[in-house]
Length: 117
Image (cartoon, rainbow, N blue to C red; front, side, top):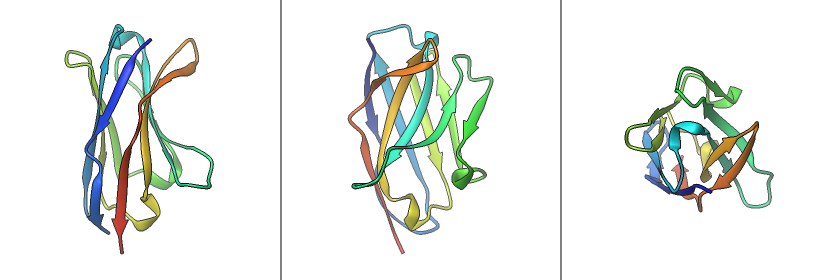
């Protein structure tokens, strides 16, 4: 089991940037693909971005393509989400997740991102 701790959330004006980080412990980080999800109260959890174990491939939901960038540092057991050109619609709690064997299995507690208009 992997323990995940997110950080970097906050309040930002529309058009601004934030960089989320997720620190992993308790497992072999490079064995896991990693993802970022977000959730607004009352809504379903939404996939945002993912990155493969080596970092060679990334995937994004359409609404963040060209604005968000996921990256990972296997030497530091961290995954990041660089968020640029933020929009009020990006306001949510953002969660980091670790996956193996085709499924996300471990989740962090989340970090709140609020974008003001």
